[in-house]
Length: 57
Image 1 (cartoon, rainbow, N blue to C red):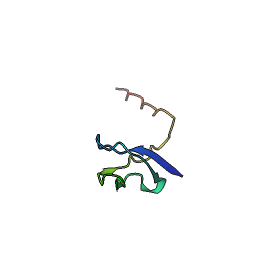
Image 2 (image 1 turned 60 degrees about the vertical axis):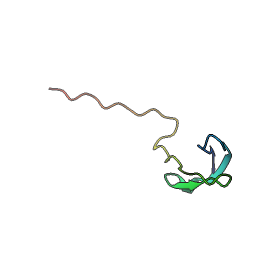
Image 3 (image 1 turned 90 degrees about the vertical axis):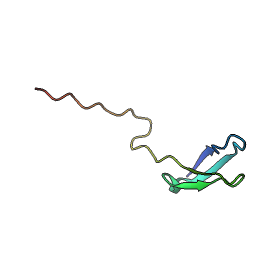
Image 4 (image 1 turned 90 degrees about the horizontal axis):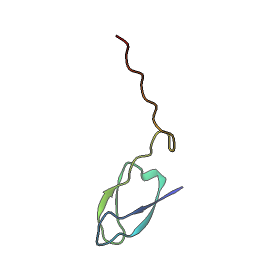
């Protein structure tokens, strides 16, 4: 599976496709050479996190 991401360099903004296995790691843009981190995968994509109940006193 691949991830499609934009280069964060405002002068470049290249659309990059990187393999899913690089999540949470740094990569380098093949167009401009800017190094940036690929966001890590969320534990439950598409599902909101459950709130913990407040402890009773």
